[in-house]
Amino acid sequence: MIEISAHQSPINNQLAVTGSKSESNRLLLLNQLFENVLKLENVSNSEDSQLMQKALANKTDLIDIHHAGTAMRFLTAYYSIQADREVTLTGSERMKQRPIKVLVDALNNLGAEISYQENEGFPPLQIKGKKLTQDSITIPSNISSQYITALCLVGTKLPTGLTINLDGKIISIPYIQMTIQLLNKVGINAVFEGNTITIPFTAAIQPQTLQVESDWSSASYYYSLIALSKNSEIKISTYFEDSLQGDSDLQKIYAENFGIDSNFENGVLTLKNNPEFQFKELIELNLINTPDIAQTIAATCVGLKLKCHLTGLETLKIKETDRLVALKNELEKFGAQISITDDALTIENYTSYTEIPTIETYNDHRMAMCMAPLAQLFTIRIKDEMVVEKSYPTFWEDWKQLGFEIKSI
Ligand SMILES: O=C(O)C1=C[C@@H](OP(=O)(O)O)[C@@H](O)[C@H](O)C1
Ligand SMILES: C=C(OP(=O)(O)O)C(=O)O
Image (cartoon, rainbow, N blue to C red; front, side):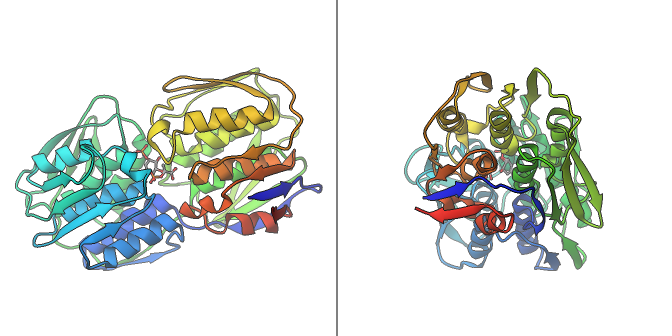
């Protein structure tokens, strides 16, 4: 457990944040499918991306991807098309509770041979690689966009390509768009229009160098920190105005609701707060397109004692933990009065509290990181702080560099 002490002086620092784990894990898989002709720069050093790389290099028949959701979903599709190979794909205890039936059904309907080793609908999976015979599939799109990305990536290697029809509400759309844009970037003419995605069979792609942009979900903790600081400025790299990551919506969300200005210059993003900003009575946001920054936004509201009604949160309960329950439990330690439903979180009021809050992290990197900015206002304690490694291994080193006093207790 660590204790983080309130920071006294204004912050004025520059930090380099690691590459996007979402972009990295897509590009690592694409590179494997296309003879490693891509030279990738600023690949994420996250545990999830390292697990992806290790899995792709692993020639044995047991692959363990721990907590990495993208690796679990993308590799399920990848091993399904590796003819002459049979693997067991497993993960952490939490991964064994995260649903995968929609993807397994879709792949089996395309001709794959995947079965469940423990509980129907959940990892671990037994996957017998095969040549898939079908070229069109309909898939529910209201549970996880990662299933759809997985199909898009391997669709490039099906003999006549793949048409994917999305059925029902489409959640996390920017992550599907990121996949299509990355495919387009490497020269594959994938198209996403209405409810239909078409992926052409692609024999080869041109060798090229691609730079992964830094991770916008990780940037959210700096937006929150600046929102809770006075006269401060943080520069983070490497970020661009024209991003493939949906979480770059942070610029608009934090400008309109918390008065944060974002400025870009040569890949450096400068965050500053506007002292004249007039806060709204109630912050209302639908976060269906940006689920990974919901925890940060809720914690920023608590730091500023703002009322909020956050909706579009139906996917949060199947992530690293049930994030709605975790947020309610932990933010209430700061006096927030929180109500949650299946898809929303509301803070209606605040009461005072006296003890130093000790935050539980539930094996969820974002539960630790979203709370860190609150240390700007109060001394806090965070349990199992190394959970941050899943997406941002140097998080605490970077926060020490910002001037926070962090001690193990
Ligand atoms: O495709 C991706 O890289 C991701 C998609 C999102 O998941 P869902 O589509 O399950 O919401 C997001 O929460 C996750 O962190 C990364
Ligand atoms: C949900 C997340 O990751 P994944 O689904 O890839 O495990 C996340 O990083 O917030």
